[in-house]
Length: 134
Picture 1 (cartoon, rainbow, N blue to C red):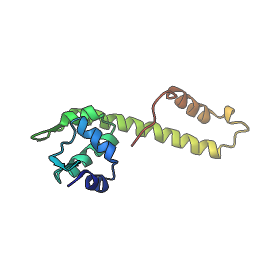
Picture 2 (tube, rainbow, N blue to C red):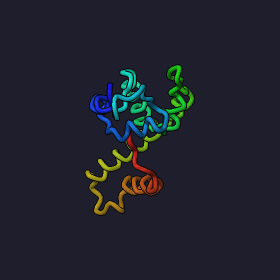
Picture 3 (cartoon, rainbow, N blue to C red):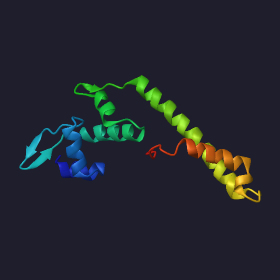
Picture 4 (cartoon, rainbow, N blue to C red):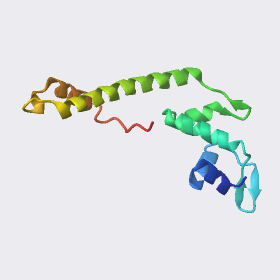
């Protein structure tokens, strides 16, 4: 299938497919004129890349698992990422709970509310953290 079909099925821009090919994550099987051609299995590979990216893996980490002979999952890396996600979930739940409390708090000023001040403390610790892409 040509690169346009792959882009349509995967809902990825052609530029992303070209970049993934440049990084060695996917391989074209040839050309039809000027258009790259891919095996139909590339769709599964793109799904694996998407899953890895959503889990917070870098393209290099994903690339180390995509071998010519098949998928070689780094189980320890996945466990480490799962632990990181668990920590992020706990932090986000604490923030969510704090926001709900702040919205309903009856204190005359939020700066007099212990729970709100704890929320500020959590937010202050993470002010330079990049946005999550889950």
